[in-house]
Length: 82
Image (cartoon, rainbow, N blue to C red; front, side, top):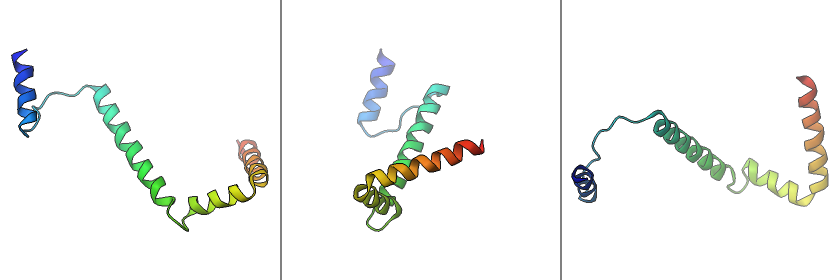
């Protein structure tokens, strides 16, 4: 318990965390967080005005049934190729 308290006090004081071997689960979780953060940033960048996702969003809001039909046809075409 004393080692844990010392480590927490060091972190509170602004010190670096002690180097501990990381498990595979910790490494996978860190990689997933980094990937999701970068994807989120890319989506946010693409949603800026006059960027592709912004234009696509506007088109889908103007004509939702046509957009659905186009998405269905493209999906069928992609599925038939495989």
